[in-house]
Image (tube, rainbow over all chains, first blue to last red; front, side, top):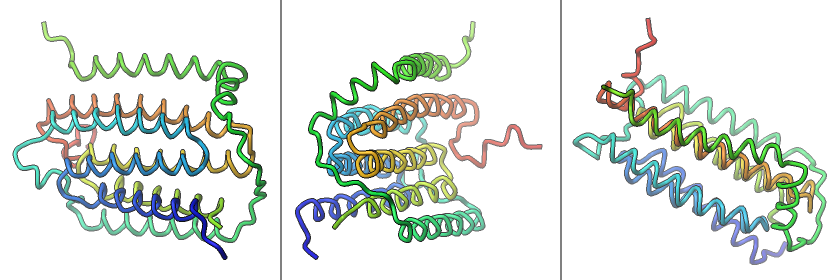
Length: 171
Length: 102
């Protein structure tokens, strides 16, 4: 049982990501939660790099750690009231938290158990190195219709977000 | 020795953390942030399957890209909704959003 560089990298990045994700959920100041969310996104980007998905990792850094976090932090600034220490409290009724924790533990236990005892048909193939070319061929070849639909979806979402955030036009 | 199973288990743990956040938080923005964590966990699954089960096909990475696009649209619209509700209710507490409750 030898532990190589990739294994150490995976363990470190995975632990970092899980810790920061726990920080997102457990911290009581929502600004701190947002900062933890940025670090968690960066950790997920690192996981993509360990999976030989370099392009996806860069997209993750640009879109998630760049754009979406800035959007979330802006929204937090817009909706924050006086005391930042009480902005991200857990739900006030205890049954909510208990049932949420119970459901989560149940789901995680069931999934981890079934994953651990399943034999997956893993094929080990050396990385081709040109994953960007493969992605480009797929995106503008077989999957060009979803690609265009995604572009239209983004446009519609941006226009809808502007209209929603601006509010109905008061004459 | 780190293999497919470990990636799936890691993604499951991340999904569980996000699910707990969705179920047990009070602020609507925090719930949106937890949903983002869950989407990230799903993306890790896509990319891991793309590497280990169908190598050199790239379809899993493409689907992860589409999930990122949908997540960006979702978070933009969701935050706009939250800002709009905050303007009317002066609160982002999900327990104050009871307009449709009888």
